[in-house]
Length: 58
Image (cartoon, rainbow, N blue to C red; front, side, top):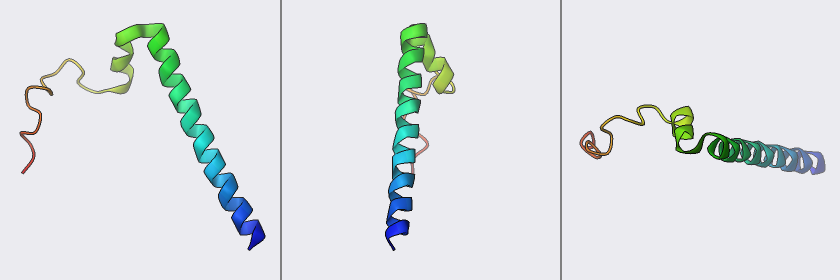
């Protein structure tokens, strides 16, 4: 039981550290590339997604 709790805590800590590393990478890319970093993380940045927002919802 105690080992299970430690394992669960370790997994949560690992997940947290991965999220922090991912956030740092995004931040570094934004600092390096500016607004062009959006092209690294989003598909169809230049498309008409804003004009068609909500049209595919039923």
